[in-house]
Amino acid sequence: MTHPFLDLAPLTPAHFAAIEKRVAGLLATEQDVVIMQGEALLPLEGCIRGAARPGTTALNVVTGPYGQTFGNWLRDCGAEVVDLTVPFHTAVTAEQVAEALADHPETDFVSLVHAEAATGNTNPVAEIGEVVRAHGALFMLDAVASVGAEPLLPDVWGVDLCVIGAQKAMGGPAGVSAVSVSARAWERMAENPQAPRHSYLSLLDWKQRWIDGGRKALLHAPAQLEMLALEACVERIESEGLEALMARHSAAAAATRAGALALGGGLTPYVHEAHDAAPVATTLRVPDGVDASALVARALLAEPSLPLIAGGGALSREMVRVNHYGVDATRGAVLASLAALGSALAGTGRQVDLEAAREAVQETWPSE
Image (cartoon, rainbow, N blue to C red; front, top):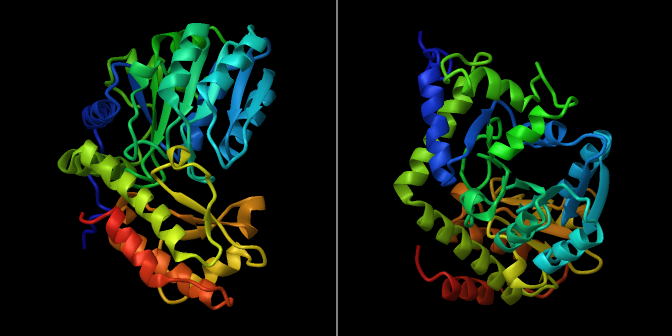
């Protein structure tokens, strides 16, 4: 018997190229778009290893754990790395980036995460891009958590390498990602003898064998399920409208923040200022004496499918994340998540006001 997930017709080069074109439309970019057959760490590492080498001076902005990862990759490539680290409860500013570039005028590569879902902050890329462009450095942006949740305009903002993934606000699978590549980024990689070639990490392989070849022959057998799911993601976004999708994520973030503040029980927003908070996920600091991982486990007992997780690594004891993205960017998911957290906090002896939280959500997000 046939199975819709197993007995798939081969994905043709023309179909693959058509999906690329639709992703480019989502990013409003005229740059080349390469779809990578793996989670977004694949093109992120490919970008860094393609562009960085001994002699590169990189300004690596760290506003969360992914920025730390980029610094490690850059050093492994032999680059001189200047880490601009800001507290994870805030965002970096264009002024801070400008000062760092002035202090290190030799900088020729800048890496930045747009929205850090792990810490709940988002960075002002438009203003930062203007500073980086004026300096003349190559600009790489991790937009995995921001695409679909907030404005993303790589061409307008001067982003040379813009990496996206489907698994967050786009509402798709984790196993496929894409990167838009500017002409000068291609030039930088072509001039780099250390850039991966004949490798799964190689963007140059896609340039030389796929793009320059007229998109007629794929490098390898495409991941059909993931590619079809990516196409379905874009179709769904086109149907809802990108502006409506971003508005839904913004409303979810505002309602979660307001509801958490009204709930009480010692929960406070991890990101201090609302304008620094990412629309894709809201991070909350738990009260002293409460373990975040245990609190989340207790909250998920009744409804395991709620978009709640504890912070990663060192944040696992102090941070709760409400991942209101994709299909969970709804008022119902926000209300249910806050109710579960409130009940779990009450179980630790904290005083909470579930009705006040519900009213705050309703007032902030009156309709969907």
